Amino acid sequence: MKKEQKWLILLALIFACGCGTTAPTVSPTTLSSLTPHPTFTPVHLAATRQPTSTPATPPPTVSPMPSPTLLPLFPLNGYVMLFVRDGNLYFQNGANAPVEVTQVGKASYTYVLSNDNQKLVLYSPHSSDFFNDGYSINTDGTQERPLFPGGWPEKNLLWGTQLGVVEFIPGTQQLIFSTHLCEAYDNPISCVSSIYLSDTNNGEVKKLADLGFSGPLEHENFLVSPNGKMVAVMTTSSVDIVGMDGREIRYNILSYKPNTPEIIFPSLAWLPDSSGLIIGLPTTIFKSMAYDYVSASTIWRYLISSNIAVQIPFDPPPPLDTFQVSPDGKWIVYGALGYNPEVYLGNLANGHTQIFGEVNQGHFTWGPDSKHFIADSAGYVLGAIDTPILVPAMEFLSWVDGNHFLWAGVNNKLRMAEIEAGGLKIYDLGIDMDSESGLLIRPK
Image (cartoon, rainbow, N blue to C red; front, side):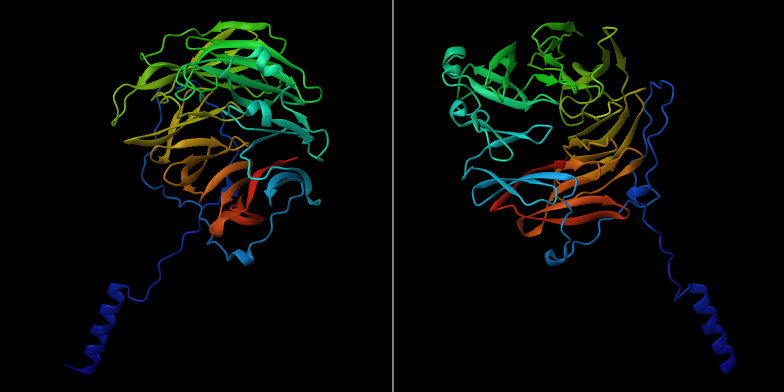
């Protein structure tokens, strides 16, 4: 064969196979480019489910973790932080130097900070010694005061009563707390509960309401309204609303009969303006591939002014204890139960749902912006209401604000993750999670 013919054949084979060409790159979608909340559509009873296959547009990516020595320090301007170092509790206001509040040693306290960042409560929940070691103190280290007046428990509570949740009433330095008297101290399955108010400035304590039977000790059945003026109380058959003066505002809202013989309570979320509640009643069944007779909830919107509740249709119904309502009262996320791994995002205005990926045995936490949520499964993933994909969120600990969350980084260092274009930006907080504890960080 002639040389010219051989070269022509070789060139033809090269062009035919496309050897040496480079595939085009696809730029990632960024979280910062998310569009505003979608416009609500008319009521749509049937669920709209997006396919569970990988979307055509790739998800945001998490940038590789830099060396710990290269991480920038998170700027604390606009934030306050509580942390423990060498057995001392410190409060830091913005970029100011930390102030030593009190010595805590190795005690295992729960810390509660008032909205004005002026008052702090330390207590041990579900402890037989909570009457003795709980106290309040100013964040500048002054005015330390026992949480309960001397002799008050013995005069007002039966022996064996345990402390439940302690919270500041929004906008005040007044506390609300629950107590539980259980059938057996070492097996607290059946408990009777009450709620009390306590003034951290003068130590006065008064009973607000008896809640009656409350099930297991870990179950809390009250929820304070955002405006701090009301308390919603859950019972085994209805919901009540009580004022801070102890008077009933609404009684026996949405009485119901549970769908199984087991003890089940409703789930509550206040509307952000305190005008009403989103209520989940355990009155239906979730068709699970893994379990029989899984309790599920019908979802209702209740308004105090009209004393009327309207059901919001969701298909499928949210499995009990898996759903979470967004802080703005517009969205619900649920699902990820056993062999039903789908994560559903539901619109509380019309019952419209769509699938946002899949996780296994998930638990959900909304960000304060009502736009982002975390799904906690074998790992953590981050979702956003207008981007139906889930992206890695590393070792999520807790939300700080709508754009930041605490993250357990490498080498036992506490980190701050910032949602930004292209994924997550990681900051150092200068806190070691072994010898020091990052107890709380939040916007001022």
